[in-house]
Amino acid sequence: MSRPSTHASHQGRFQVPVLLPQHSRVLFAMWVAQQVSLVWGLTWVWLHWGPGNPAVPLIVAAWTLTLMPGLLGPVAWLLPPRWCHVAAGERVLHDILGVGSFERLLELSGHNRRITPPGAGPITRARLHWRAQTARAGGGAHAACFAIHLLLAATALLTGHPWGAAGILLPGVILHLYPVLLQRSIMLRLQPLLERYCLPRAADR
Image (tube, rainbow, N blue to C red; front, side, top):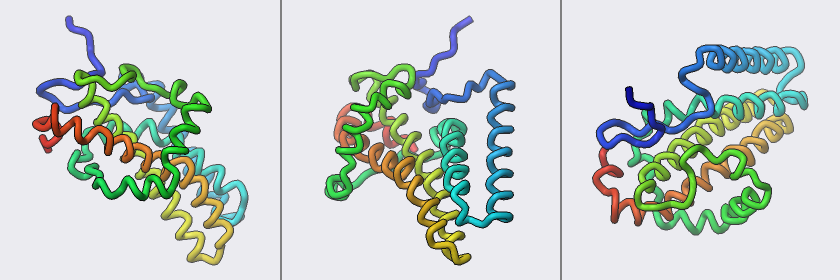
């Protein structure tokens, strides 16, 4: 009996290591219950106290952060690599917004060492395709979570709660928008290498 691997298969689609183990129905049920509880709590606070209540941004941030592990796998399977292509000119935007400083801050804080997935390490030719898929999955999952912040902030603004909208949007910018930009910045570094060594894989979809 062969052991399951978290690395990419030459014939199958890449599977990103996720924080939610697929083999554990108990953990999956707990994760689903957590999501239902957070959505119910957010709905209750929103309807009874309004989107301007300070608890709303906290609940939204907790919801999207805990939602992330469940999005990584589906995004890795469903998001076509061509949608994640980053134009070279976007590097200017990254420099203006301080994405490099954000990356260095994560390194100094030790955040990357705590959340580094299995198999991560120096980017070599052998793991180049895996690293690109990880960046796409992480960026896509963060983008989906930021969309939730953006949608809820727009709803709060349209219902007459501008400060509540700002409180919902700001955590989304820090927790999800900047990570999206960081993953796109990483893709900018990887794309020339992918075109050189992994072009058939990179353009398979």
